[in-house]
Structure formats: C-alpha cells, structure tokens
Length: 246
Length: 294
Image (cartoon, rainbow over all chains, first blue to last red; front, side, top):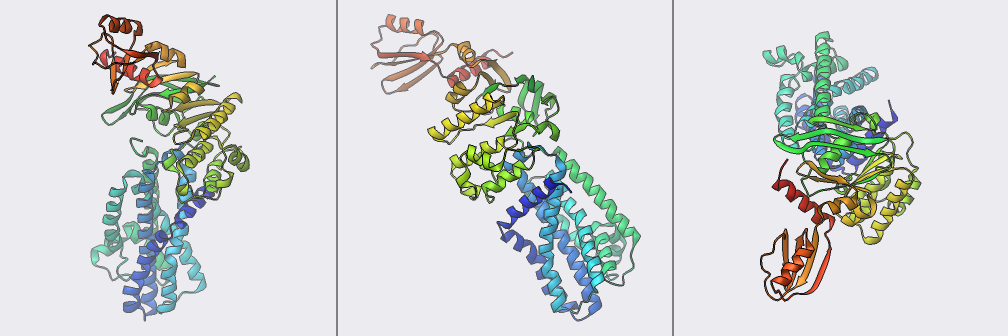
C-alpha cells in the first residue's frame, strides 16, 4: 500500500474526527436497532442472538457505507477543494484507496457498540477463532457497500445521493434477509436473497458465526457485485468533473 | 520550450459554449496574465490545462502530455480557491497533505517561512482571515517545486504590503526559471508582473500579445473634464460616465474629442487625458467583438 494512500486516509479521518457528531451519527442506528429489536426478542437464545447480531452487523455495514460514501462523496464533490485535489500529481487510486481505508476505520467505530451490546446484553456467544473469522468477514463484505456508496457519490449531486441511498437501503436490507432469521424469510426473499449484495454478505456472516452452511453461490454473487460496483464506481469517478461551473 | 498548450480547444457545458476554438502556447520562463470579464472562459481554460476537465474537442498538453495523466502534473502547481480549504484542518496538515503528492517537495519549514505562515501552522484554516487563507492557497501551489504554476487571483483580499511581498515571491520564482500563468482582477498586478497578456471574451482569445501591445491595440483614451452644462453628443465616444459636474469619456481619438468640445463651445475645465486601464481596454475589445463577430 502506498504512502500516499495512507496520507489520503489520514486526511479524511482527521477531517471526520474534527466533527465528532458525524461518527456518533453513524454509530447510533445499528446500536439502537440492537437495543430495540434484538435484545428484547432474540436476546435469550444463543443461536438466534448470534445470527441476529451478524445480521445487524451486515445491516450496519451497508447503511453506514451507503450513507457515508454516497452522501459524503457527493457532498465533497461540490466543495471547491475537490477540483484542487484533482490537480495534484496523483491519480484516482490513492484517493480511492484512502477513502476505503478511512471508511473501514469509521465503520469499525460504528460496529463496536453492536458488538458490545451483543456481548453483554444478549446470550450470543462466539469462539475466539470464529470472532476473528467474523471480523475478517466484516472487512470483506464492507467492500461492495463502500463501492456502492462511491458509485452513488461520484455519479450524482448530494440531494439525489441522499434519496437514492434511502430508496436503496430498505429493499436491500429486507430482500437480502437481514430482517429475519436464517431460513425464516418469506419464500421469494429466500430465493432472491443470495443474489443481492446484502444477501450474499449476510450468508457469509452467518457461515462465519454459526452452523450455517457456507454457500459458494452467495460468495460468487458477492464477488460479482464487488467487481461490478468497482467498475461503476471507477467509471463514475473518471467521468466526474465536479461542479460544471466553478 | 512549450510547457502548456491548448490546440483548437472547444469546451461546452451542455448547450453553453465556454471556450470556442482556443489555441494558446505557454513558453517556459513566461509570466502570462489571463484577463477577461466573468464568464469569459478563464476558469474553464485553466481547468483544462491543469487536468480538472477534458476539452469537448481539441487538445491540451501540459509538459508535453495530457494533463489528465498524474505524471504530467508532477511539475504543476495550482492555487485552490481560498474558500476551498478544508475548514477543520490545520495549516500544517493541509501543507503536508499537498507535499506528500510530489517526489521532491519543498521542506515544510522553508515553505512556511517563504509565505509567512510559520505562526499559523497550528491554526485551522476555517479560522483564518481572508488574507491568511490566500497566503496558504498560494503556498500550496509552490509545495511541490513546480516548473509551472497557475495562480487564480493570487492577491485578492491581501493588503498592499502582503501583495507586494507575494509579487516578490512570484518574481523570485520566475527569476529561478519558473513559468507563471495568472488571472487577476487587479490590472496593476498583470501590468507589474506579466510580460504577456491574453484577453478572453465570450470563450475566444480576443488578444494575445505583450501587455503594452494589448493596451496599444485598442488605443483607447479616458478623457475627464468638469463642465457645468450637459455635454453635446460627441463623435467617437464609446462610454460616458458622470459624477456631479465631472465627466469621464472613453474615446479612441482624444485629440478629435477635445477639438469637438472647443468647437461646440463647451465651457469645460480641469481637462485630463490618460491611457485607458487594461480593464477598460478589454471591455472595449469585447464590444468590438460583439459588433463585428468573426
């Protein structure tokens, strides 16, 4: 990884950390959902609590990235600093990779409360080996959602990005089966689920945390989404010229 | 050697034509002033030459290659708009961020000293005064030891002393072999720094010559006089401005205007004739262009 990528990541993180409410904002929803739904309804059952935590983590990964990138990037693009950065002697890659790194770090902050609530307020259990596996899995599944956010952010203005992120995230959550326990979703969701990025992601998470059969089809689906979204994000980045008049 | 070049460049935004078949060469070691009213295409031209945008047709080159390739921007310095600095970041952080993009940047301390920023290094850019922001913005253009810099309104918002010291910095850079392209609203700035002026209007190059030649090209004179009675209609006057009893007229032929005033028996006093400013000159150029389009 190049030093310039780290420079971009650090720059983003410093900027975000100077407005701490932005971090609190992205951490509060997944934690609130845990407290409102998982703790009272599935908290006592180790099996369901563990799967529900995995679902909530996937949900959090999707929503934080969709919003922080979709809206964040769209917003950055209308700032006059953005065209200036494009005149520096670096191409798309360090900025892209730097954003990814910064996004991973911020997402970890948003996920931490979910993990803590699950550990202390529910019966969910996880062996150390599986915990590490789940952590790796979170890093992996975050990539397509970061790319989805970037694709939205680089291809539309901030107001449109907010709407698109909002329109996308509920169907993706429901259709992927994040709102239901494994195998308990309505039939069509079970059919379509594995082929949505959320469904592929959550099935990988379930397999990481418990006795859920690893499904190569959902992994292939997730990788396909990742490659496709990377293509769209890169295309949107390349055609982006910021504001039309400046 | 040509450092930057536009060859028959056209740029549209939807239906709006921002640049219309513009060709321009910037030779190494030049200081070129780009002038023009708002909407003339200055910003668009600079954004094409610095790789921010792509021309709709035609070609741009920076150091012999497409400016959209990162490698061709390695010796380029650009000022951000002063309002564009990320407000929550400190001056030192912004400078380090920009320096990290270049293979052989100026040492941080040297850059800070050169632009008088040493005392500001821990301050967040959002809290700086307009003049301080401007200094940071200009310093960023020089962070990577560029061979060519594009300075957009470099001294807007600076007091006279700060402006002079910045001019000295630009002259020093030029004396060391640097190439400068600058846009400015201060005509004094172009007149004092640039050896060549490019006048843009309506997306076209209206004039491209030495600063003196551009002024001479239109040979417009500003005639001021005090008269208690309204002036009669006078041939050749392109603009009239009245301030109480004081009248200011623009005309390409001051001698004839004065003879006409005498012939018309106008009781004028305090006559003053001087060359028009560059701004007046390019306004006139723009009007000529409108009157007889190519």
